[in-house]
Image 1 (cartoon, helix red, strand yellow):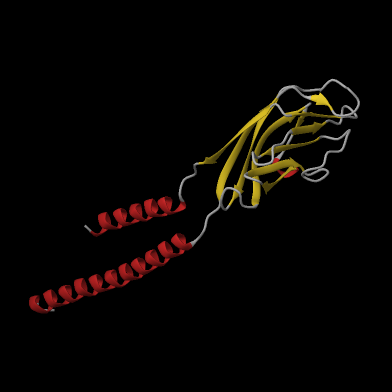
Image 2 (tube, rainbow, N blue to C red):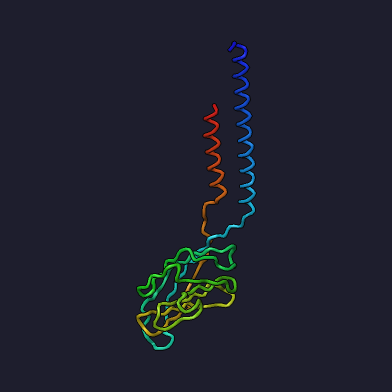
Length: 194
């Protein structure tokens, strides 16, 4: 092959490689744009947390001494917005009279300007004496209380002396993670092409 035809072939090869690169780059840009639109349009549920503490429990019926006083803990839950129906209880830290509650034992429902949380054993707002169960009214528009029962005694205990705070749990944005990953891929590709 002559020197001139060799240079033409090399130039053609570089142009072909550049065209192929641009084709894939354009596909990548289209995919990125579609992903951004998809993520931007998707509504993601937020994680909320309620921290609570209660003290001064008194027996509801039999006059028994409360097995535990005070009680404190937290529940985290997922909802589209605060005040919306709860999608899932995601975490819990609640120990009452030796029973360590798990997320799958608790339910919550919106009421007033907050939520009602309780054990699933007998329904969210019902307590069965002689079972490990509880409820906490965590809203201000109606008022409320903290009730609990224990399998160790056939009674239930309640108090109006409790406090609670709600907070939104910060979590990393999926979109920020996506862009970070794509930036790394682009930087790596740019180094390979140099």
